[in-house]
Length: 216
Image 1 (cartoon, helix red, strand yellow):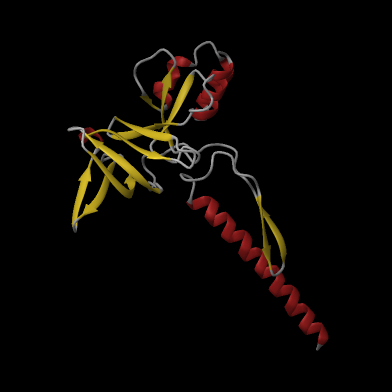
Image 2: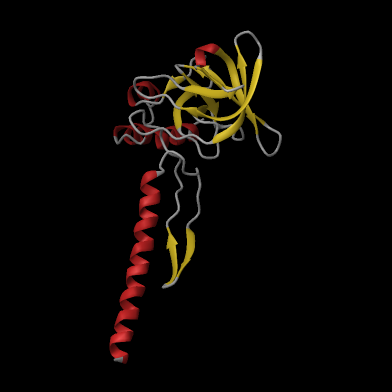
């Protein structure tokens, strides 16, 4: 009898650990666009003991074919006529067939604007810093490299979550144009840097940009 109870306990313990690990893997697999740029491994408590989930150390690259994700913030929406609307909302991100848009309700009526109808949108973070999105290429772009001023190739996110970016565009230091982050648009800039060229050939675009920044 005691043997059966012990066996059942160990079976339940193993099942609980397996369930927890599967749940952790599920979370990692379904939230690649909103994961932190640098997330440490996380240890969680379970009835069967502590389980450590792996961290993430690479910012995600936004895929236009994936389900868009954006956090909700208090946005200041500056329209073309210089009027400003304040609304707690989130950006519905650009897809392969439709531009980004932002919506809010006022007096029971829903309003929606797209990037081409605005001068900018922005939010204020916890440190009273302005996180500005500029209208560009059917989306708003938020500069990710606001701290690393030494970086010559700047990265832009389609979300205002610059600590959890969905990087989709880049800009060379002296260039005026912000370009979509694609293999063909980055390819001209890796000439002369064999390591960056190799990373690009493996479709590791963000790693290639990191390598290019090291040469400046």
